[in-house]
Image: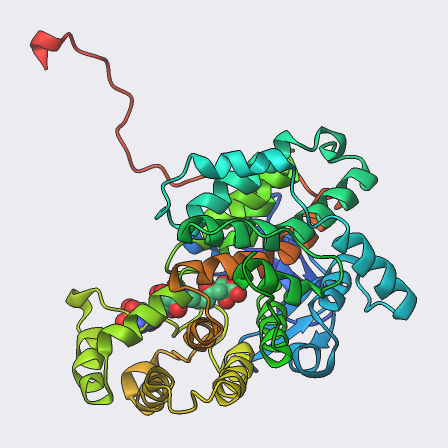
Length: 434
Ligand code: SDX
């Protein structure tokens, strides 16, 4: 972060004293105006619901250019990482440490993660308290938060070693917990992780194998899942990452912070969109129903949104959507489902939307969630678990951002203010006078 020669000056039409504020330049992307002295100097706050024009921190992890449709993890384009940048654990190492691992570093990191994939045997009893048809995200919010009760040896957030151990434990155990949530929901026994399988193969094994028969993973499907995890790993200061940072700013332990992130991701405007997008495609049903659906979307009173479309930052194509569509095609081809009606419906809907002035004028393009549901369904993952997979992938991004925040000398407890529009001071009247 460097100081710009240019300063920002805030002046008032009533002649009140003006305020000069420094402007900082990052490596790339918009400059920022440092308003930290605004309240002390003017007695006023800025007003920015939804933080449309607010940088909450400085970060060196992920950069998004919404106009160019660009996404960089530690400077590497997502297209390179997802296609020829190695596997998800290499991306995890990159997000956590700032550099891709060499062969020796990768072997050590994979071994460390692999040897933390089991959860405490007592964790299984938490599941017993849930209904079998509980939404997996409710189970994950509960069980991930509960991990803190087993790891008193790594909860001191000011100890770098504790932060490192917690990060590894969370990355390693999320697949186990997500698979346990699935097995519990279908009444099958939990499947223990296996150390001889890769991260994504191990997850497929814990999800789909049973004690009754040998289970062989399909390498094309494992690679597809690995790519889905890479595409979802981090995304700058999105709602759930900001939730993790805000929770972490109070000194809460990392397991509690990640549980807060999972809760926020669950929302249909955020990570819940992949589940909502697939339900939307199933509801539309066929290509000839698309015009009526689009009409409803354009009718503001309908409250109907085109799920999987639009983005706060991407005002051009979400680069992840393009890669997700390719992965979708590869998986459907591998499974002989190239004529999958939902995939064809999704492509038809995308084509119609991209040619429709309503969507073009609002810069609404497919985002990562539009195709991810179709490919996850083809992998055999139930719709209700789509967002759980998103949480599994985003855990590394959340924990990398949490670690960066904790070690940032500028970080303080997050405490936004407000524009108060409620009642003036007034006296309580006795009930008979109300
Ligand atoms: C993710 O932030 C991230 O990085 C998130 C994420 C990540 O990796 O962490 O990328 C993951 O959350 C992707 C987004 C998934 N959500 C959805 O697909 C749900 C559908 N999308 C919308 O809810 C919406 O597009 C948002 C929430 C994603 C973005 O909302 P914004 O930036 O606040 O956009 P907006 O509400 O200001 O919309 C601008 C206009 C409005 O119309 P007008 O009032 O100008 O007439 O576009 C309309 C909106 O009504 N609009 C949509 C729409 N999204 C916006 N209209 C129909 N369908 C949509 N999907």
